[in-house]
Image 1: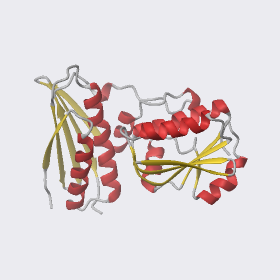
Image 2: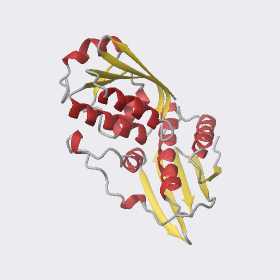
Image 3: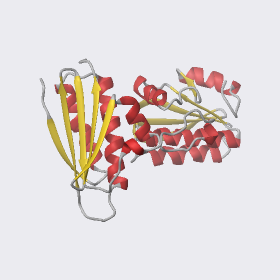
Length: 140
Length: 119
């Protein structure tokens, strides 16, 4: 059953738990595998938590919109926010060939998102960040 | 997430269960770095009940690994579920951690691990 859903989250880390529950329920309705469910949760966790933690310079409440769609074997995720201009495509990937003691502790989130998804497309339009990520997947 | 520490002879085992994410990873970090700084000769993290780990959880394990090499503490993970192992593989970290299938294997082999490297 193809069902496109839109979720509106507040810029509060507590919203990540609700997001995970909604995503898992949607994956189940789409008959997506547990692995895809996990990957989708990981991608959204990394992207949305980045927006919440780094996207806003004020203390006001903001909304982050997440759209999920699965059609003809292709998963499409769109994350839109009104935070500061930030393109994940311009983040320098961590050098994973370095010896472990020379590697930075963090910085893996966006790298993992790019590893999981087949494509990322970023746009900044009318003061909003829009990130569209696609991945071809099979049903469970 | 729950974090509990127990000792089997001179090995500190950190039993971790639930999701290791941005919210909960500081608790694992406190336990892990605490054991390493506290002078444990060997530290194992039991990942068998970890259903989800994100980049902040991975970063915590990397920090533990880096500190263990400084303090020459033997450090390993065991009973990783397939999804958690996949995340380590995504980050190309599966070959830098000492990974064991079971607690028994981990306890048998951790003493042979070079404290500054792999097996």
